[in-house]
Image (cartoon, rainbow, N blue to C red; front, side, top):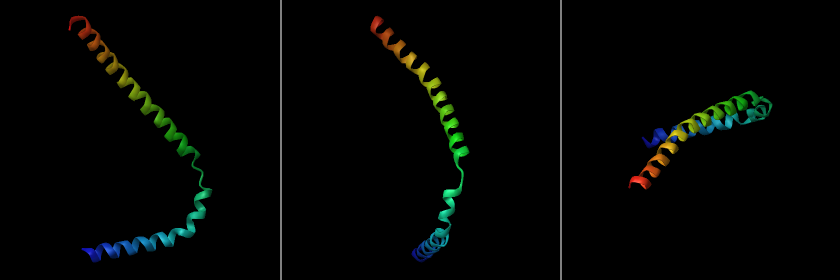
Length: 71
């Protein structure tokens, strides 16, 4: 098992070293569309979170007021 893991580690190291010259191409890739899409998705997730949080906060506040009056 240890030999297999060691062999896998060597293969990964070779793959990383082999792809190192291609790192220069990463600066030429336009990621603005992907970043914009992630921003839109983040906004949607935030809206859903707020929509779920608001009723829960109202319910808890209602229970506290009810407990304060009748408790």
